[in-house]
Structure formats: C-alpha cells, structure tokens
Image (cartoon, rainbow, N blue to C red; front, side, top):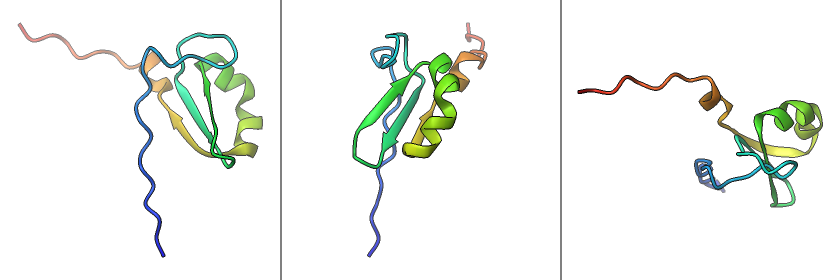
Length: 73
C-alpha cells in the first residue's frame, strides 16, 4: 500500500514564529501530527533539537536572501 503525502502549503506573512511572533520561514511537522513554525533565527537556534522530533521540514529561509527579479517596463 502506498500513501500519498500532500506537499506543504507555502508559508505566508500571516504565519508567525511560535517562539517570538516574527514571520515564520520554517514549518516543522511532528510525528504526533502537530506542527511548529519558526523564524529563521529560532530555526537555527533549535535546529539540532528539531531534527530529533521532526518527520518533515518545509524550509523557506532562502526567501531572506533571494534577490527579486527586475521589473519589466
């Protein structure tokens, strides 16, 4: 039997870090079915511990360093 897993929805500006309330860029899905959201700072701070309890990561921290495409006139 194969189970399909839906991809995680993109994080938005409304998703907030569970530690400090800043915009979340990392979603951690837990084996219990719950999830935790973290800003980039707290994701780095708690990264090692999160690896022990997570079943999946949805990481969008690249958005902090990606340069936007130039606007077309």
